[in-house]
Length: 460
Image (cartoon, rainbow, N blue to C red):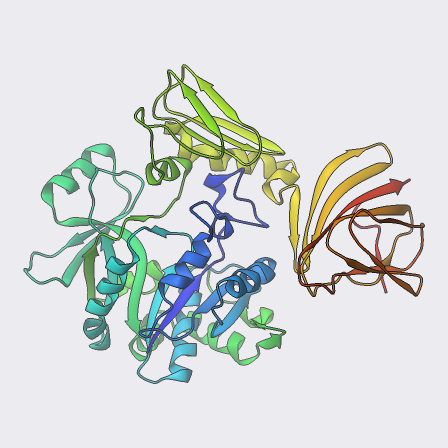
């Protein structure tokens, strides 16, 4: 079996303000009804593959569980890293866990945030790579370039007539001159960061070239703890592992590396200019998500999840609108959006962490308005879900049901509220909300009091 391992721990700061730490780009549904993470999981859901192993951080655990449930794909495991340790540790972990299931297992290591518009081309390349990976080589997958792109790393291929090419070198992101040279030479492909390898051969490579990384991962896995549907790696052992990439730890030190060029309509979606490239465009090369109207403008990108956007007399401009942050930038500055994120982080602005809509295991809450001594939220509670029993020391709450039916408990008294009904929760009362129905329930919550911050809660 091939064991797909999906790495899903990134933030995607260049796609701010849409991508945020609590809900980064891999979980956004930018291209249709499925997120990039879901598209990646569906891509490796077939007879050729074992259930996916997902490696992420604890902040995204419920997002991962929810999105896997939406597409009905049960994972092999959802492994939570206590801290980030780059990509060498996940590669070693994937090899260890795959070998436990099957001594002859192959591991397909792939990011969760890439787009492929032709997944069949990708699957054909994986099938083509299988024999080479079983022989002991690490197979990487290169994207046949069609433009002299300076935003991707490259792979220089050996000159053979075979479909599986030897790798001569990995090349860092080039300048415009070298990118054009690579395109003209025809022996360079974009590095997609996807690898297929034998679990047993990879463990041997780690023992030889990065034994400390492997021993740290082995100890963290040995002392891992199951928590609901998640496997938590042991923090004390995991934090001793070197923060190093798979490329530096292993790929630069081994000689048996092969590459299969492919053309699956791939993009790493690493910036807003990459999103512009991937979207359909009008006759003036403008693209958009959400309502947008372009007048005497060209090569522009507009993304807005609420307001209509009107662009007049501009070229090569990106407009990214969210309810609490607006980005307007020239397309040639797409790589520099991360600098705005750094500035916001330095002053502890919340716009890099969460949107106004905050997702929870039971549903979501979205701030509507706030002022002196009040806040108003829209809340959705999933079918069968409930909030914990709690009370507040400084605020009262008013609930108005706008859709569905809710079971409300206040100071031990239960009652059902349906659409258009409301109830008052006095300050200090123990209360709980539950949706026992089969459809999502929605309500408006109005908080009033002398202190209405999130930390005014006592769980019972």
